[in-house]
Amino acid sequence: MSNQLDKIKELVKLRSEARLGGGETSIDKQHNKGKYTARERLAMLLDKGSFEELDMFVKHRCTNFGQEKKHILGDGVVTGSGTIDGRLVYVYAQDFTVFGGSLSETMAQKICKVMDLAMSMGTPCIGINDSGGARIQEGICALAGYGEIFERNILASGVIPQISGIFGPCAGGAVYSPALTDFTLMTEGTSNMFLTGPKVVKTVLGEDISAEELGGASVHSSKSGVTHFTAATEEEAIATIRKLISFIPQNNLEEAPRIACTDPIDRTDDLLNDIIPDNPNKPYDMYKVINSIVDNGNFFEIQKNFAKNIIIGFAHMNGQSVGVVANQPKYLAGVLDSNASRKAARFVRFCDAFNIPLFTLVDVPGFLPGSGQEHNAVILHGAKLLYAYGEATVPKVTVTLRKSYGGSHIVMSCKQLRGDVNYAWPSAEIAVMGGAGAVSILNGKEAKAQEDPKAFLAAKEKEYTELFANPYVAAQYGYIDDVIEPRNTRFRVIRALSQLRTKKQRNPDKKHGNIPL
Ligand code: HXC
Image (cartoon, rainbow, N blue to C red; front, side, top):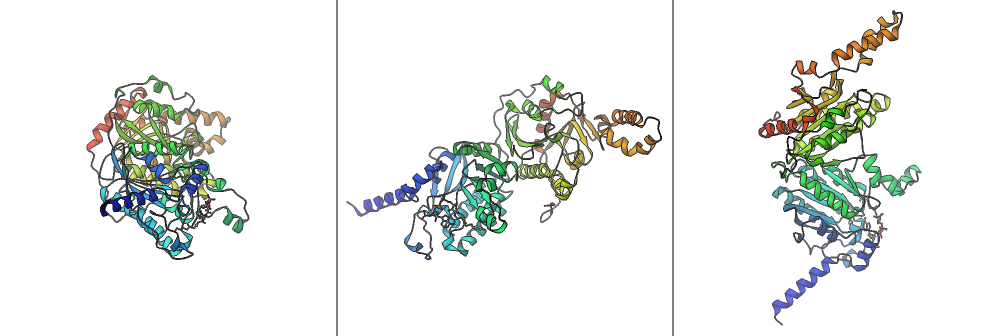
């Protein structure tokens, strides 16, 4: 046999060795936990046969604690590139079968390499996390590796989309890479994220709490808002990431892919003429409005279980990707609070960074009052949303359905925040505050002097409501561009978006603004 053939055989052997990661026993353990391996995950994520692996022969360089005798080809992460629906992406997947996916110096270098390539090529970077954190044997070198990754996450922010899948443990400072990325997805029951695990919590605070209760998918999707998506299975998780990619551009210099629109752009819907209840205090379901307006009723919701009083997500309008932000009257009357504000603000900023037009549906009675909100800095959180809308230079089309009162009117993409096209339905009520509140301030003293204060205030409230609770006062000043028939909303919004396709707007040059974080 020729020398050359022997060398090729050795290559094939080394490759299959690397593909086995931590070995069959560890792979079985991973499968028994209901989890796939790093390579299996990438195979599902990427178009069939498109994966190009990098750095398969990398080994760690640690010589502490007998590590010099334990080498696994590729170390604890699988990295490379591939395509999703034909579009290039860079990827990495931590391999729990190798030292528990713990991060070594060389592993960090592998991850940084694909992050750098994604930045150079202008493609999304997707990381799948499943790791015991910093490789304990490597000490400060592992920490330095995290630092290198975080810095790249920060520099890539707003340049390329970054997506994190959490498919296993993600603890300690390791959580900060996903937190810095644009979207995070957690698998239910098999993943968790926390800065300090249950054992430390018990030692420091004496609190008994399970890993799931402390930082499982359900907690982070409903309470903290740390994760944007959850999935019952890894298959579902991967499908969600692929779907997300379909709505977003490759980088901040491109537009999201336009798809063929099979839904007539002039489709009207009588349901919308009928959806606002006669009683202004009665709720209706904003999802019905969104689904009626967007292409084929396909709405891809983000953070659906967190701050349900505001809805965010992607949809297509005439095949163009748009970011939808909508108050939800069915939940807390659609009021803005701290969580709703920060949820929507981050989404608005993502859309603005990546050239995705904003379509806003308004029905907001105001900001949630009370010490709970005030003491939790609703002023700063509300200001985030205000800042995000006011800073955004992408096309902004807004439709006010019903209430739009006070500060929340301004925050929700009003004309003065450079809203491009602001429509209202005839049912819109655009004013400083609702009738009851207004007359109690304006006519409270006067009422006390009346024979029947209640009847007096009711009459005043009626007068105020008739005068202000409509869209025409705002339209009279040009703060609303047109009052439209609800059933025509789809067509009017599509036409507005099409006019705005060539919109050019720049903010003043600066190093960066100082958003109230
Ligand atoms: C080295 C590690 C490791 C680590 C796990 N392993 N974590 N090796 N460094 N951090 C190894 C285990 O020794 C074991 O090796 C294999 O991975 C699988 O781990 P198991 O414990 O058997 O798995 P499981 O029971 O599923 O438990 C998973 C786990 C647990 C919950 C993640 O391993 C764990 O608690 N690990 C430590 C987590 C941690 O405290 N990390 C440091 C966080 S601080 P063998 O050879 O037996 O198969 C941190 C700072 C980051 O990360 C700062 C960034 C700024």
